Length: 276
Length: 303
Image (cartoon, rainbow over all chains, first blue to last red; front, side, top):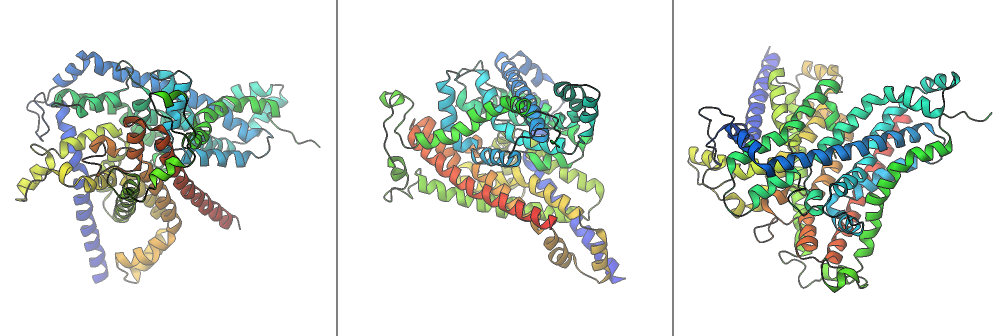
């Protein structure tokens, strides 16, 4: 009897402690939940009265803010296309071709990509991009992210492709398909879920990034939303809190939506394993 | 018989080319380029921008100059600060808090579990700039939520970013990153057969005993993985820059921010590259250790 009682009290104690910890974790975000809908928002916590979308209207009238979201989209989509296409082709080759030392290649690439972090490589990346004459261009940000994210993307996808039986493509080739046909018409549709995972992962990474666009871009017309938000609140003077709060929420929306999509589609574990 | 393969060697090579070029140009080339630049006095502007001179180990000597090594705003100070940052925010913060949460979440009602996970994960997935701005508001002296709470509790207000900048970024990074450890330990705990814990319950074990004697030993491998990964990430993280920009007076200038300042504010690329090389060496040690651990584990599973 006491045993069950003590189990019961442990459960209650843990529930209370968890609730308290969860509440503490929520504190820094509570302001951010209300402020976008409060036309009189300041840095203080206040429940909007009444709830209003006026702040979002302000964002949509601000050319610089909209431009930032558009730039984020260009850079993320550009990067994602390169990562998705490059990783699919390369990991298919790593999985299916008779090239020797494939495992070693995969591991060495992974090692490089974890050693060459943004903070270690910001100087040479800047110099290389500068040498190519690409400073202050979208393509610079796109290429740098594609290169940086590809090794991990290839690693994930290769794992995925290795799990697919070769007999699919083999039977296509017995029926007379060329290897390239077998790839595009037979393998690709089967690999697609893996590609979706990689693409979502790459998109979230590029969309949320700050350092790389911050050092590679100069002009305000090319800045993604992350750099725009930073310049909004870090520059001298009082930030326009109403605009910033709504803008930050709009900017976060794709990440939230993709997260919900992924956890609905693939379960909880995906984001746990492979955030860079 | 020749082994049948789906993709010829040529086709395979062609398939790997696009990724190979991109990785070569933006991962492998920077790795070697940074080493080269660290031996020069390359600057952003002026004469040495176009014609950098070879200075040998000069940049490294200036980083490790004993006279100024521990001075605020110098390399040694930044390195020690980074080590403390990793110890407090990753190991003592994220790992311990993540472990605590994961363990408690095993035995709380499902709805509470969902809700807590949602909040902790939100801190992790939202873009870093948004998070930094939310904290900027949270810590504001006049109106911030934190000082509002201090008022309500009858405690003195604090000008957190000025008085305790280092502890602010420690707490900030703990808050930001706990989700990863929590999720990793969570899935590790739920892979343990429930019968182990039921048997312990029958024997009258307390939760602490179950944790110490069953939970922790069985997920030891995951703990090692977690500690290496969060150490590497925290060591390289740039996010505190968004909250403090390294200040006030260099007190939050961890190595990533130091590199940025030396290279892009003081325009000393050679010296910035030398710091980059040291960061890469430290990363390499952790990465090799990680590979060694995972390979040893794979070998043990196979055996």
